[in-house]
Image (tube, rainbow, N blue to C red; front, side, top):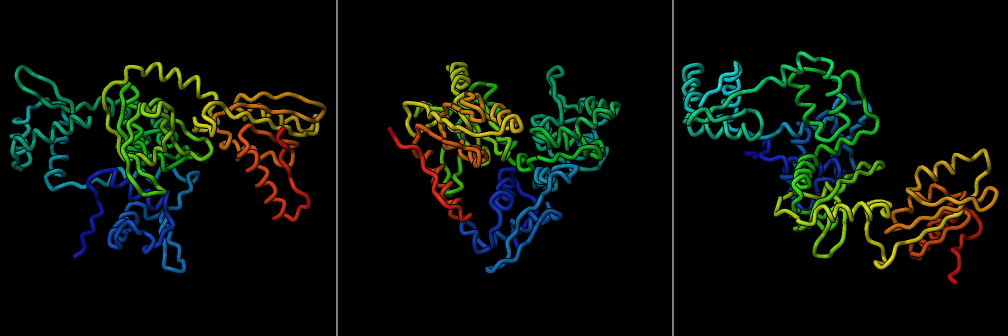
Length: 420
């Protein structure tokens, strides 16, 4: 008998399922080496059940592989919100969920014993008082119910004032529709929209990163830790080595790439006494620890160092100094002044100097000039010279340029400046 179940007990497990196909997808059944064939089949069936319209199957030499094809600018919501709604439950869970919430709809505040009695009288179902109390406490922790002390008793009640306000102020629903598509924790807006039976017919987001919702549980824990100014222990998974390690650090800020959408935690590693960034999609779990007494000083230090970070790296090959990069480009003035404007807009604080007519020099100091290479290549064809104190970066740039010359059959060779 198959042990396949569509629902899973915890969101971290759901997150791994979807990420295997969405982020690390395009693998056949045989290529899932770290999991059994049956596990692969179960994960594939879950994915097809949750996200059927977006599942794509490609046939290759060794079989077929499954991936997710999601075009964000055509969607009225994020389809990956569906994975938040896949938690397994028992028969008692589902019965108590609907009956307790229905019983408290009129605003009554009842004790666990009173709720148990009313469930029997009103719905003809019998539950143990302790079971009802545990369920009410769990719902209070999740925010579904409120509780307060009434004399010597603890009473539970349902506060519908927020949902009633939403219903009476329908204009706010457009804002919720936009929020669920464009901001962190969009599942909150999606849940409110579902509860009010409201459909987004207004907004489409061209550059929306659907996969962010898979990281929001981790993001929430990190933001909570930053608000409390505490240390954390991160369970970090290496996608390349397929290993899981513990990392003790002080979380300071979240960085988001506007180009790839990838999100990073910028933190301070006390053991090595340096700032570093970790990808959110590699963090499996966050455990909050003791307060960090020097949190504010570290945050101020990060603000001072961040201006020298081109991307997310705070480490140069030579730890004793910053990489200094100098690039000269040629433009046709004034027709190509937009190139200079682009340097000013995208140069992240670098100095721009007009050397002569049509020749401009761009200079900047950064921690890791390797991160600049993709941006620098966009100026190929205009670059007169490029020098960097990190000679490995300089050599890599000219090596890539010469490789391009050969592929396009261009005679000659680009030569880096000679060391003096």
